[in-house]
Length: 201
Image 1: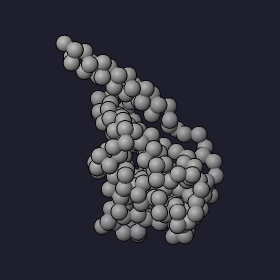
Image 2: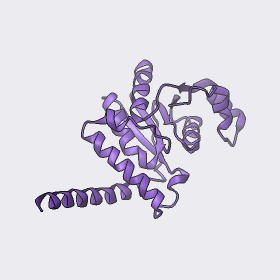
Image 3: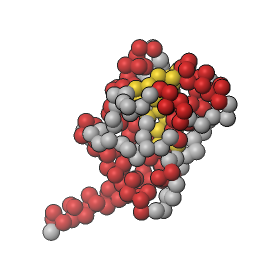
Image 4: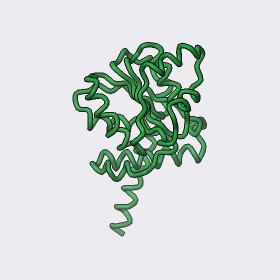
């Protein structure tokens, strides 16, 4: 009976936390206009929308360079550039050729952090805009922040198509999985939480 009550309390606490997490995610997009930063990092995933958002920030001059972290190793630079939609193709191509770096090592959130940290250190950046899916942003900021002490992180979340219907069961499944990963990460088990391949980000 005591074990049942403990499990019940834990489930209730997890459920209440999930509701708060979902509310945080729902209210995070669209984000306010970000301030000027030294650079921008976009974390790859299933949707191209994050890369387009990051490219737009670069074109607006809100960062000196853009790192696209977690690019498929079989994807070429030309292919990445061709996937980005732009109102001004010539300006977008100039910005991409000048100031976009591709990272091919990361396969998950922890990998994104490990790929981003030396890039930031190499360029001596002190402020960084992080672009990823809205539901992924809390964990991404926490994990990257652990590896970039002293660097100010500015989250610019975007809402992927998979999260377009906040009342759908599929959306709540994504939120539940991500919230659980977030809890695991905050508990200091980020290697375990980052072991998944974040294909829905």
